[in-house]
Image (tube, rainbow, N blue to C red):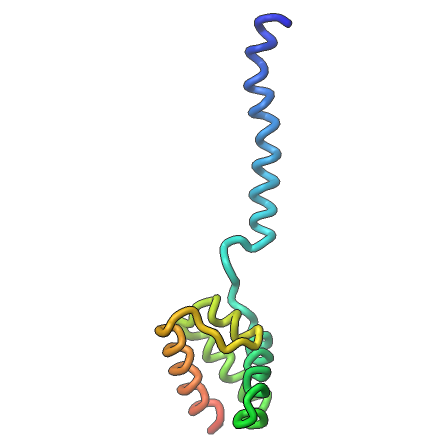
Amino acid sequence: MTNTDRKLRPYSRLLMALPVAALSFSLAACAGIGGPQRPTQDELAEGMAKIWQSDPSTADRFTDEQNDCMAEALLDSEVSDQDLTNLADGKDEQTSIEARDLVSKTIGEAVTTCVTE
């Protein structure tokens, strides 16, 4: 081994690290590591229908069109992506009391608009 071989080792290691770093970044982007994404209107409407069906007092209260209308109102609101994802999954769970109040207010306003149309 010569003195020049040792000088090349750090560069070789650096070059080997670049593909590993690039792979890590691309996998992170594909996995959605930045947190939940906003669900689609259809996903949200389906999740809300599940929530309504789980409560006998609201089981048959809203039509598919009304659920779509309420889902659109929620998507247009400031409700967080995580809270919308929970609703789309059929879970009436919010991340905080403020989030719960915002969801309730938004749905309340949407019901007034969507049911009377």
